[in-house]
Length: 130
Image (cartoon, rainbow, N blue to C red):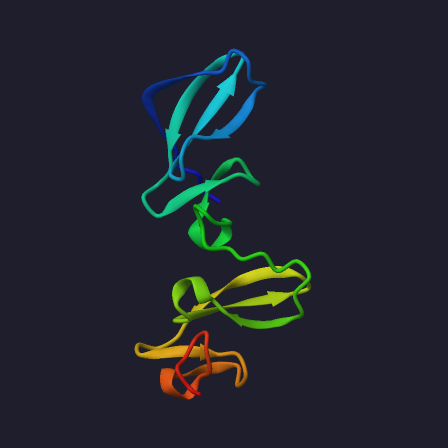
């Protein structure tokens, strides 16, 4: 795995922080070592992942910066992403988030049928079927 980091000239005060990486907004992070810190910008398609201390794909990072979902306590299956207006769904397996899938244009995810469907054929909150 290649990791490209672009350090900027922005400094950060790390005098009271232990060595490590710290969020400095969704698309950058501070690297502190020996009380000295610099800001590192993520690649344009990446966001900071608090779990790894590095920039990561948006689908691997939890909100608010990323799109990863919390699957703790959820049964294995596919779930409508209501925050994205049900135009996509995500998969949980063994309480782990496996990723998003996007429905074709004009369709929303139907949890009952476990497939993408027309909005008027899907009950709320994703559709308008009564």
